[in-house]
Image (tube, rainbow, N blue to C red):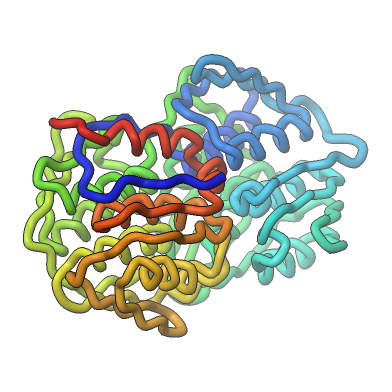
Length: 418
């Protein structure tokens, strides 16, 4: 699927769909509970459907209709080998691996796209050391064995999803556990989202100086009616586009305060020189005299592609650092972001762990590839707001992974006013 975008600034208002990251966590907490839950979810995606399908395979009953998911938790033990199709969803795989171990389930995980290439070490070593057996055959991962409580150690700089998966699995075990984090915890906001979902489910996790203490034998009990809040990660594409518009872009459906770390986009846009206003459940961003800044990507890796686009519209140099983990996403996001900007006329230097962007020189338009990556496709849309000519995005259907209605919402901005 290819999409051709009209160049020039956009303004108007959209309502952002529900947070994919929060939805994964709440779905798992609901499926591990002891009572039915009604989960209000405005907008599904391939990744969320993957988690729903895997939870069904493990025995949960999930009915979906009109933005409402009715979840009846898993009952009894999981017998026989179950097939869990993760698609390209890293969250689905990395969260449910330890959950399968906590359930003592025998399963085969099916992976697609770049997911089989994305790292599982050292999570796999910790699971193996605590009672599980894992065997890889290409895009298939076979798991079996009962996960045991005990002392776990994971690095803080590889993937926060490893940590989140264990935090959701270990409370189910009979005995208590500790999870020690070696080094600085990156993407800490995503772990905070997991802790927030667990608190909502009545699960106690104690923070200690180098990690977490997890009491065992806990019950999961989400409120019977739970709503997934709006997605700050996906809102960022519209908010950054607002930074190029005098009239601005307003995004409805966002919550503050929030555990979503990507809400940091507001402070970063203000540092660039944009105007950001919060009112009610909406956020409005308008343009200003944008200037280059320095960005530490350690806690906000998913924002980097669209912040790089914002940097292209800012006068001077922007330096993005501590971003090496972006090379292990749905694409090598440092490479694909740099290629996107170069094809549209922006000078970019690619570093091993970052980018240097020379902004303020204008973008021309042209044809760019999404590189099979939803965040690159959506960043290309934001870049079109800076271009003098049309932008054609090849592989634009990649947005189905996280935001299926993105292109319709983007076109909704055309010609709108606040």
